[in-house]
Amino acid sequence: MRINIKYRRSLIVLGAIINVVFILARCVSNGEKDKTAQSPADKELITFESYTSSQKCMSCHKAIYDSHLNTAHHLTGQPSSEGSIKGSFEKGRNTYSYTPSILLSMEKRDSGLFQVAYFKGEEKRAMRFDMVIGSGVMGQSFLTWRNNQLYQLPITYFTAADQWSNSPGFPNDRVLIDRPATSRCLECHVSYAEGIAGPALEPTGFDRNKIMYGVDCQKCHGPAAKHVAYQTQHPQDTTAKYIVNPVKLSRQKQLDICTLCHGGNIQKTKPSFEFTAGEDLSDYFSIDSNDDVVLNSSEIDVHGNQVGLLKASKCFKMSAAMTCSTCHNTHKNERGKTELFSQRCISCHNTTNEKFKTATHSQINTIEKNCIDCHMPAQPSKAIAVFLEGEETPKTSLLRSHFIGIYRDEIKKFINKNK
Ligand code: HEC
Ligand code: HEC
Ligand code: HEC
Ligand code: HEC
Ligand code: HEC
Ligand code: HEC
Ligand code: HEC
Image 1 (cartoon, helix red, strand yellow):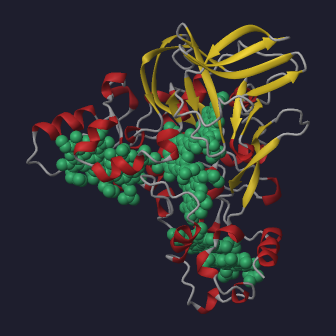
Image 2 (image 1 turned 90 degrees about the vertical axis):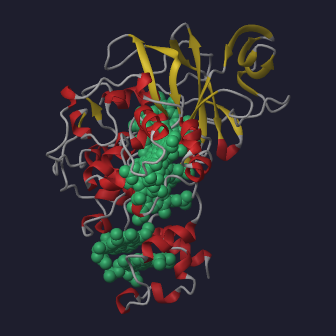
Image 3 (image 1 turned 135 degrees about the vertical axis):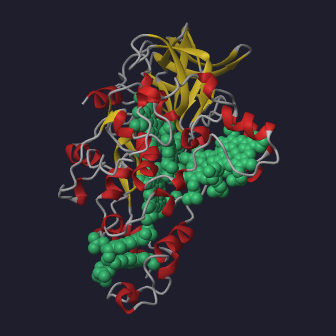
């Protein structure tokens, strides 16, 4: 479980992915292959130049472009700036002390933003914030460049507490400054990074001018330099060329796009950035099929494997067309819109149907406003957890379980709260 090991070394420990989830990650079926698919061998080499700036999309797809700017996808990998970092640089709120003599302070200087390590009040090392990983829904990790290599900074920002925190996996008695950031972090948090050193599968050095930050339009629609060139030169042509619309792909290929980053612990067999929308993910990652997993919901870790969990749900198994887009419009930030998501449940589960009027359902008057808290409860992630200053136990983030089912305990809580 190589990825698992890498996670453990990360700022936010994404590591404690237990076996059930590992097996679930393997549920992603590689059946249903599209026979017309290009084999990866004949396809054009993907480089930074295959892509274009997503600002180019604005002139022809303005509404989507504008709303995408507010999504967690767009914000999940960014160059550092005061605007992109959520933690405070104000005196009194900008420090984390490891021991009475070791302090780390977040500082704004003329040459940039820094994490500065002090020993007994004396400055020992200043490390620049260069890249922000995470939109800050839960937290943010930070990377710094040294030559062409990226290193993880020792302090992370944890949103639920609005505090700087020590990163789990990092020691709590000294400042670790030389933990390399793996290419794996970039593979899910930026759309493309051109490797220039190390093995192709796991580059160790990157061209800092050839990074496409965040989850860009082109991660889900394929490299679009040719689309933009063609449509610009042929403004009278209203049919799209050289672009992928996921909705026109097979269900499996639609899911493949999301599985790249929401499929938990999948193992790459080819460089991750060579996979583009419309291809078979199984040509790039080893994904075993194992749909007979018996689920025990109390053991599920919901971190990052929405695909595996959803696939194990009855809703998915018993409807031929369900994909992630059945509930998510990824062009918009719909976070927290419980009623809107519940409408999407109701599109299949008609609440006026007799079958719907179960004992529990009949007790709730406002049932149409919230199906989510009972059937997709937020559960503590065993993986996204950090240590706050002076605390012995980690604080965890909550994630929605995508194993849609009947959670008796959560349902009791919900009923008590809504009495
Ligand atoms: C010069 C205008 C122009 C630019 C710039 C442009 N597009 Fe398009 N795009 C079109 C036209 C025209 C269509 C076809 C009509 C439609 O679906 O809106 C289209 C369709 C699409 C479709 C749907 C394809 C389908 O088969 O249904 C996607 C996805 C898309 N564009 C993505 C992008 C992305 C991503 C960018 C930026 C990297 C971009 N476009 C830039 C003109 C443009
Ligand atoms: C290149 C990796 C990548 C791909 C591909 C990707 N995602 Fe994500 N997605 C992420 C990351 C990383 C986050 C966490 C963003 C954050 O908060 O920093 C995320 C967050 C989300 C969220 C939560 C948004 C919020 O407001 O908190 C949803 C929903 C989501 N993705 C759905 C999808 C769907 C559906 C697809 C496929 C169409 C998809 N993603 C494809 C990486 C990806
Ligand atoms: C396989 C894809 C994947 C990899 C690899 C990955 N992440 Fe993530 N990361 C996600 C997704 C998806 C989320 C959103 C939470 C979820 O669904 O679990 C996320 C969430 C986060 C968050 C919280 C974001 C927020 O806005 O709340 C941080 C911080 C983060 N990741 C940092 C990292 C770092 C550092 C690494 C490298 C060690 C890394 N991630 C590797 C997919 C990935
Ligand atoms: C996380 C994946 C993801 C990202 C990022 C993304 N899209 Fe899409 N896009 C989709 C999916 C999925 C569909 C198909 C939706 C459907 O019809 O079910 C789609 C559909 C489209 C269409 C077809 C017309 C329509 O309104 O459905 C256009 C045009 C488009 N996207 C443009 C863009 C542009 C421009 C960006 C960036 C600003 C972008 N997309 C970012 C996943 C994504
Ligand atoms: C694409 C259609 C579709 C959507 C959307 C959908 N479901 Fe389902 N769901 C089904 C089907 C089909 C079944 C299996 C037959 C049944 O129990 O009605 C099912 C079963 C269920 C079950 C029974 C699970 C079990 O293990 O017994 C629950 C609970 C449920 N859905 C809740 C939801 C909730 C909550 C949402 C929204 C978050 C949702 N569904 C969205 C199609 C859907
Ligand atoms: C039946 C409806 C449904 C389907 C299908 C669905 N989701 Fe979700 N998803 C939700 C709901 C509801 C939430 C919670 C939204 C909120 O409260 O902001 C959510 C949240 C998320 C989040 C944010 C995680 C968190 O808890 O903060 C991610 C990431 C995500 N979904 C990814 C996916 C991916 C990838 C797929 C496809 C494999 C998918 N979802 C399919 C209903 C769905
Ligand atoms: C208060 C918690 C609660 C809420 C809110 C809730 N459910 Fe349920 N649901 C349950 C319970 C509990 C069951 C199991 C049957 C029972 O005990 O009444 C169930 C059963 C189901 C089933 C399976 C029914 C069957 O045929 O066995 C579906 C489908 C379902 N719910 C969908 C939904 C949808 C859609 C919504 C929102 C419109 C929703 N539920 C809101 C608690 C809830």
